[in-house]
Image (cartoon, rainbow, N blue to C red; front, side, top):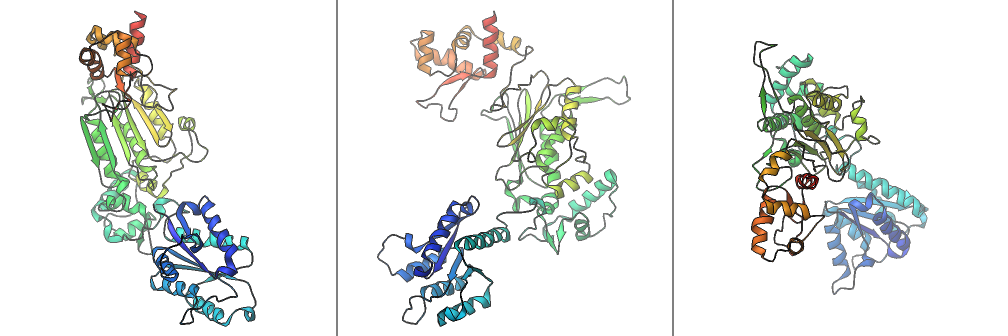
Length: 508
C-alpha cells in the first residue's frame, strides 16, 4: 500500500523547529513511518515555478493537511491572505483530511488575521493545543492513529468483527443462510427457524450492527465473498512426485463461502487418494477408508481457512504429493504459543472468533481446542507418521500418506521427505548404470561441467541424455534454478529420493 502524504503547513519562521521535528518523528516512528510520508517545502529542490503554485499542487496530491497555527499570520499575498490559509482553503476545496494544531498563547498576542483564521478553522474541525514539541508529537500521533483506524487501515479489534465499509445486507445470500440454519439445527440445536429473516439470523450471530454487516458475514454467507476479499480463495494442486514441479497434473482455484471452500478443497483431495474397501465382518454395509482419514483432512482444512490472517494478500494452499498432504495458510499462532503446544490439550483461541462460532454451529469445528490433537491421534491410530505443524512465514500442516516417514529436523525445509524402505527397492531396479554413477558421485551442488569432469565424460550430449535428463525425470536430482533451466549459474543436487538411493547404493 502506498504511503499517505501529509502536507505540513505553517508560518515557517515561527514553527521551523516544530516542522522539522514532526518530519523526523513521522519518518522514524515504526507505525507512522509505515503509512505516512510527510512533506516539507524546505526539502524541495530549486525549480523554475511559482512557489505558491507548487505548494498548492502538493496539497492536491496529499491525503492530509496538517496545519500549525500560532501567533504570526505570516506573509500576505496581493489579496491579503497568507500561504498557510491559502493551503488550508485549498485542502478544504479538495476534501482533504485536515488536522490543525494550535500553539498555546494569549489571544491578544495573536495577529488579528491569525485569530480570524483560527476561528474559521475551528468552525469546521476540532483543533488540538500544544505548548512543547513533545506535546505536539503526542497530539499528532494520536490524530494519525485515529485516521488509520477510521480509514480501516489498521484495526484494534478482530478482522472478522470489523464492519465492512461498503457491503450491505443485499450482499448476503439468503439461501445459503437458510441452509446454514438447517444444518446448525441438526448439529447443535440452533434456536432460530430457517424462516427467520436474514437480519434476525445475522443479529443472533453478532454479524450485523446498525444495518452494517461484518467481514465475517460476507466470508460465511456472502453471494460471492471474493468480490470483497479476493485473497479468500483456496488453491489446490496435486503433484506426481515429492516436490513442486511442472507440469502440474491437477490444479484448481476454489471460490465461495468458507463452508463451500472447505467442502470443495476436501473433495479435491479425497478424489486423488486411495480408498480401501474392507470386509463386512463387523457391518452389513461394506466399510472403507481413505489412506488419510477424511476427518483428519477436514479438520486441517477448516483450521487453515478459519484461522488464517485475512489481511494477508496470500491464499490458503493445499498441495498433495506422492508421500504427503501439505496445507499452508497465511496465519500465526497466538502470541507465546509454540507448535509443541498444539500437540497437547489446549484452550481454543480462534484468530477470527465470529467466524469460528458459525463453523462450530454447523459442526465443522469443535470448541475444546482438540482439533490438532485429534489430527495427530487419528493419523497415528491408522499407522501413519505423526503429522507436523510448522510456524514459519506461513502456518503449515503436513499430513503423511502411508509409507512416508516424518522428518523432524527440517524447519527450513519442511517439504523435504525421506524415502521409505518400501519405496527404494522399487526404484533401484529401474535406475540405469549411468544414473547410478551420477547419484554416487553427486555431493552438494555441482554444475554440469563439474559433473562431467568427475565422471570423466567429454561428450556433453552423452551426459545430458544418459545421465542428467534420466535422473531429472526420475526425481533423483533437481536444478538449483528450476525457473531458468539454461542459466549459466545452473547447478544440480540430489533430491531426498536421490539421497536415499545414494545411501542405499553406498551400503551395497
